[in-house]
Image 1 (cartoon, each protein chain N blue to C red):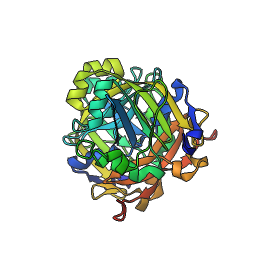
Image 2 (image 1 turned 120 degrees about the vertical axis):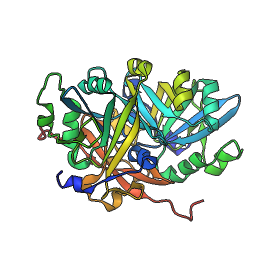
Image 3 (image 1 turned 90 degrees about the vertical axis):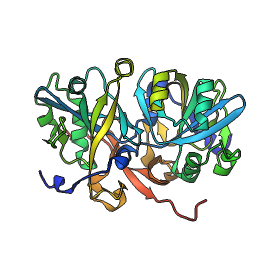
Image 4 (image 1 turned 30 degrees about the horizontal axis):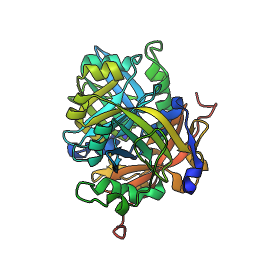
Length: 197
Length: 197
């Protein structure tokens, strides 16, 4: 036990998920049979490099899940600090009991040729995905796997193949959810230097 | 197309994973038959609240994967800004061809009763996990699912059930990988206020 361990404290299991909750928050959008919806999700993750694949966890109560399962496609997008209230509302309101959800949350949609799901305006990145059906994962774990078929980013903050939050307008920073609508923004950059081993 | 769309640029598919790569980086540790190892992983994610479950993607070339599969358990830990060089080395060096990996990377291990995998000293959080065997996910996607059986955090930065990066020593901030050893730290806090809708 060194000095660090003196601060080590148990975390109750019902709060343990919060220890790794602060990946960047995403918005998931889908459309089926003329119905469009958008929800926020904290649990989205890379799965493969090429072809690129992603995972996202979507609860059975989410209307977006039904649209995604029926259409076989969805868009993951990365919302910004400027969109944090919209993101919170998109994760709180439900289209099941609030037909005006998107309007109330302030979600503005647009469309790209060849992409069935709508895209959310004002985000910093968009990944158009085709669902790779995995019924066991979907039923047992609420876990969905998508293959990315097209991607776009705001070139003020993502260019030359990587994020450049440090040089971009601060309102374009990504959101990292803590709990209950409290977010952190992405912060200081630590570039790798040659004098490190 | 509004003003935001004028900045929308396509991202090559081989760089698309980087759009959601900046969840917090974790270290994965495991032990089997007296061999201990630690690796860095960018693709770890929450999967369920209670009982808490997590996912982590681990390539077939990783020695840690073999230890995890054989022991059926692992620890996910959240490294800090102070540990960014160690984290980069833990993700770059391989125990397969570098028997002194942990020493070279500067990894210090400790152990907790009832947890087979070693824990990495100096991290801000630790989640002890039992592997939920899912052979199809493991083979097809390199995707591992764990149930969290115990968790701890540094109580200077995680207390009262959530992160408090804004009030903690700055070297305890989490790391968010961009590419090639370049990291961002977690940044500014945006608490939710009552005057928001």
